Image 1 (cartoon, one colour):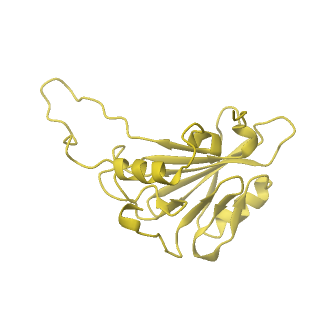
Image 2 (tube, rainbow, N blue to C red):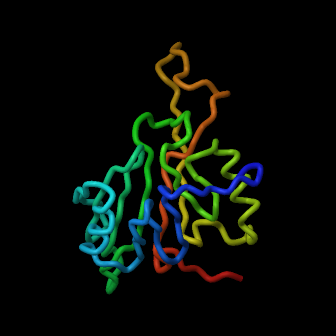
Length: 181
């Protein structure tokens, strides 16, 4: 990460491209292709699991851990009923102005631990193939959406205040295949 900082925290989520997510505190790995029951069991070792519904998915559930909402979805592709997407969203204010409590790490980059420009710089330095966007590796990042308030109102968050990512999603390889030229 910035300044060569390596994230080394036993209670962090480690995103593993094409595999899934290594869960914190030795709780195992949430692997793409797992059944709904296996995925729920894995996450339930960390937090209470709540079933949900999202259009286009055969099944979905959420859990809260620290300041994160963890979501897992599966059964969205024909013939593939297993886990296909794992998401992490920051709870609270829609425009996070502080680092996340729990590290969510992609190749030693804590996605919620640094302001967006620093995360983008670290991702660009890590990512050796600019012609292949991170989405093709299964990673999607969500920036905060800042809206102007009512006319004449002071902005809720000054432009100089650091902004942090609000969400990160890792998808199964079948969801993001495309030819590389």
